[in-house]
Image 1 (tube, rainbow, N blue to C red):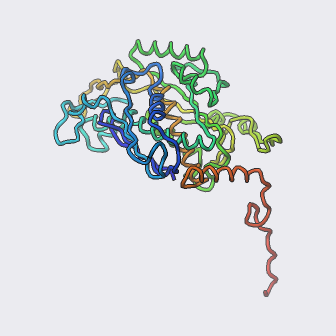
Image 2: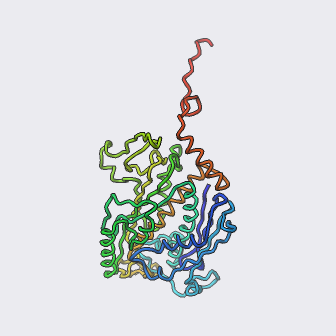
Image 3: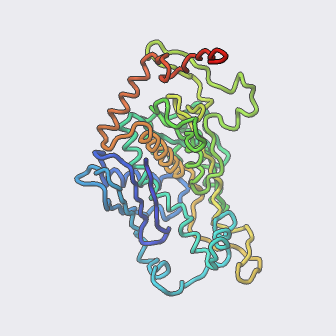
Length: 407
């Protein structure tokens, strides 16, 4: 079972993540981890912090000479700005230099202050900040390394930003990831990219923010991850929860999602065919997003993740109330981006990879990578066999005759 826990505040000394349940023998390097973290800082419309946020990484435990040990992996991501914040964010007894009493609309500030009994919004915002996703991406690097050994990969791309849409049929494959990342907004369509950049520039001039939609594509996922037998084992449910947990995400569609609600049944599902050459069942369309009955079908998994415009604006216009005086005022301003949709795509990849890695470990098991891969291959090989009709092996036993009256 794959488990992970993150800790740390946006302007704290460091973020930490512990990942437990990984098999031994996985190749892990700080350079590859740092490269994955750098992808989270991509995208036109990001704030100045992205230019000097270096994500200094240390592997603290669970890795020896570039290989996982099967024990928990601990990773620290140091905050290069810590010297500026050491006094304000000190863990030692004392008082902050500035108390933030005007919660920002659209943020966790007010609800968190009420829930935990705080009078300073910084006690909430530091943990609620999307900076926390850097720790998730570090965990996701490990998940991606694991699923890659099982021939799975995850790609994301921006399909809508600031009202501008990319063509629905423009979907990148795993080999296109560098091209996607090279785009200013991580969009696979150059013409749509240009319109999105123009929209960002216009919003920036007005001190406003933009939201958008990212499509996440999981390739090579075998049939049978997830389960129909319990509500909390359904793969689509696990993915939706993981993706909805990303800061500022407001909706998740699997496959065609909400669009199918307005169609007739004949136009809402994926027809099944038999591929003689590959000796496997196929679904040509992706209306179900590669998941049926809570289980992966062996086809492309598709999820669309919608992010709201960021609530912190460079020109605050939304009113709020000072929690001390109860007087109407304007909220304070932290450093912000015009949009973080491109970066959200990298985090969405992370959350998808973590779900797939967890379900792969649940399905195939194994304490070492070699054992996990061996179990996976045995399962895939067995899929090509004719299911047994024997009782207890996939088919119900024939009904037995009722006993004669009187015994």
